[in-house]
Image 1 (cartoon, rainbow, N blue to C red):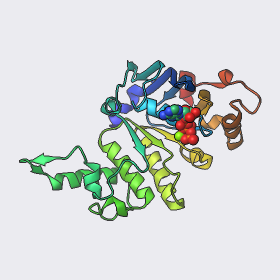
Image 2: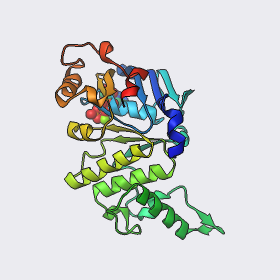
Image 3: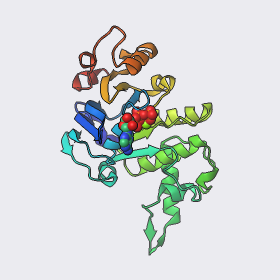
Image 4: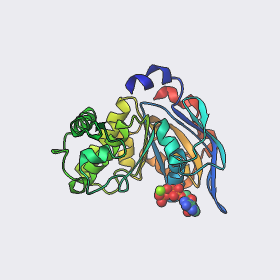
Length: 273
Ligand SMILES: Nc1ncnc2c1ncn2[C@@H]1O[C@H](COP(=O)(O)OP(=O)(O)OP(=O)(O)O)[C@@H](O)[C@H]1O
Ligand SMILES: [Mg+2]
């Protein structure tokens, strides 16, 4: 996975959006979105309620088809007709509550739909080893027993298992919608650590968060949506909490820069990361 993503991708973002728009009847949810998502970096997507964050990730995840614009994956335009199309090329979306089956244990959850068979029977030993190895690679150490039902885990641990499952399926891009929204302090720390570890393995991470403290802890790049438009995007070093809040609440920069002037979602912003 690491080798796949490393030097060859250095110049070219893993995923590029160009002019992506999406309408719901009369509602223009997304307008002309440009965004670059590089491998090995954490991109934080922020914006006020209704700004279009969930719509944008659902478009990347193949749930919505854009009304206009292009999704470019590893340099090639792609058209997703279903979430499976996106999953198949390596885009995994982690939703906090929907992803896992409470009554199944960790191994069963991680291999659900991808069970390993041996002579027509479930190969429990191999599946257990695969699950264990993935969790170890992600440095998830707080899970004591991988045969415990997922329903008995904390929110942070559940999130860890959902991400581990995505990683095991060779995701190149992991998208997380508000992964820490419902979590306490130590669980949030665990999830932020996992996010950082994913990026250090060469995986691209796109994370939606309302929590700018978390964002500044983990993100390499920031993208701010305002009323369905990309107000600004670039290396996180270009922003501080005050300027990010300004962009989120007004769609303009603190010095009154208009959106088009500051949007460096294109390749220009990538070298700094
Ligand atoms: N399925 C849908 N049908 C109709 N309108 C929708 C649908 N999904 C989103 N919208 C509209 O698109 C706009 C963007 O919504 P979206 O859910 O993407 O915002 P968001 O940035 O994720 O907000 P929040 O921070 O509250 O989660 C809103 O005006 C919303 O009402
Ligand atoms: Mg949302």
